[in-house]
Length: 170
Image 1 (cartoon, rainbow, N blue to C red):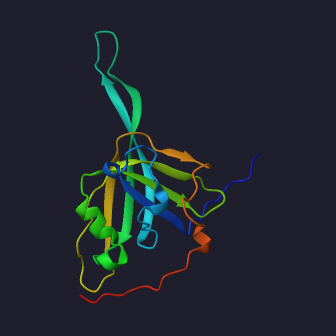
Image 2 (image 1 turned 135 degrees about the vertical axis):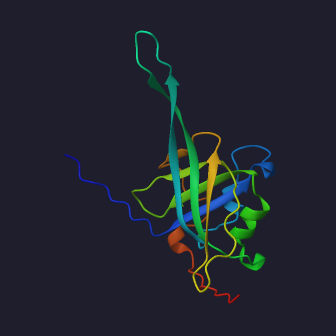
Image 3 (image 1 turned 180 degrees about the vertical axis):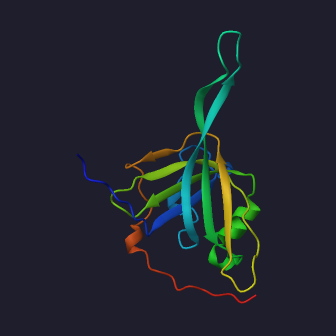
């Protein structure tokens, strides 16, 4: 029996490139905005699709599976400052735009992921006295690629300098 593989992702690169900015795919993620330090959760989820086959005089109603749909679920710390490369502002400004995404965990057991999604603006503000987060579910028009061959387009995440948190009092 094989030993279990445990992923404990503490660092992952999260980047987007607007599809309108790509003349010839694939996109160049090396110069793409990096929202790594704002994202608190990123996951690709499948949505199973079943088609109902109606009942006949000799068989009960049944279901037939078809290809799953896909979505990119994101949660990030709200930041509306353009000076810091705001993911909140990027998602708001590009709501409903088609974009390429790349997510690469800094974990030797974890493959990277690339695909396309329609960007969705996140939350604005929230409860008083609480750390403000935003969430978005970005639909993917096609199945993303998840592969060990997908690596960061820039230097290693472990070599990245940890930025100091910036606190904004509103």
